[in-house]
Image 1 (cartoon, one colour):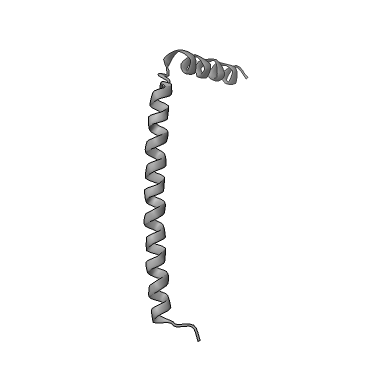
Image 2 (cartoon, one colour):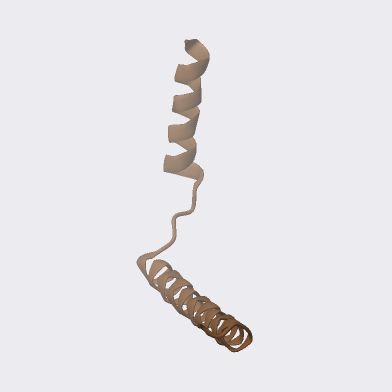
Amino acid sequence: MKKIVNYFKETYDELAHKVTWPTAKDLQNSVVVVSVASLIIALVVMVMDWIFNTGMTLMFPAA
């Protein structure tokens, strides 16, 4: 039990005193970067899906 209590005390100490938390501006910049990257990846996957779907439709037309 003492190890668990010690673990939580050390965890709190590290989070409160040793971790460098990002500023609000840093977080906003990160949100923009992640959003743009996600949008680009989604568009790339959409185009790949469209190409694959078109190819399959040409190779195997519906009866």
